[in-house]
Image (cartoon, rainbow, N blue to C red; front, side, top):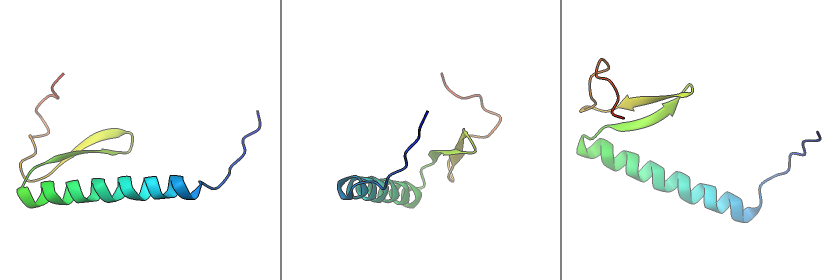
Length: 61
């Protein structure tokens, strides 16, 4: 199998930048409001924030 790495198009870079900006704004807003956020780190979800549930609480299904 041949894997060819090419640079993303200008349009793709603009879309990625817009998504990154949107996510950054929402995470900053949640932080200002004192809300927790669930992020992905080291291949598993991580809950961060002042009002985050305690780590011993099982995740909701």
